[in-house]
Image (cartoon, rainbow, N blue to C red; front, side, top):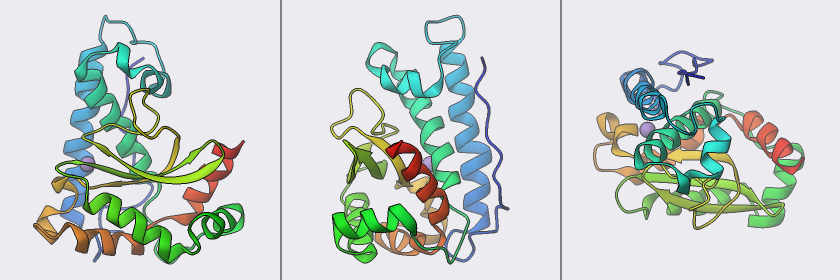
Length: 201
Ligand code: MN
């Protein structure tokens, strides 16, 4: 079962001016495509070839570094594209209630996630996950994620923010905190809410 690059449900320019079209095009069609290709190459004829991406993540310690890096890259970016693209939405329903209960406010959650992303040394991700039924914020290095059995903080990710330089360097250069401020303008909170409800079962 070969893994494939998911299509975006919006154009490369849909997140302008917060995330520029050139960054989106390179990020999706070059970086993400490379993770997909390298994952398929690493799995070809090897254990895990017929496993779902989620099952690979859950047992990632039994696989090679290539599967960890590229499988994580494929999972993380697929999630990332799905939680972007709808400027002007806000958390609602069960997710809004859980954010207020856990963090006090949306602003407090954003601050916590932005700090997690800004303080992640080198490349990685900031996450909002459901862990033991509760919302939790964490970060991971490289292309790791909270689904992986090796993750420090495990859970079901419902929102991920890519803090690799390739996600922001063309527009923001070294100013990762500026990118982390801007990205809140283009989060699709309806998609995050649907992931929250699914994770809560
Ligand atoms: Mn990326």
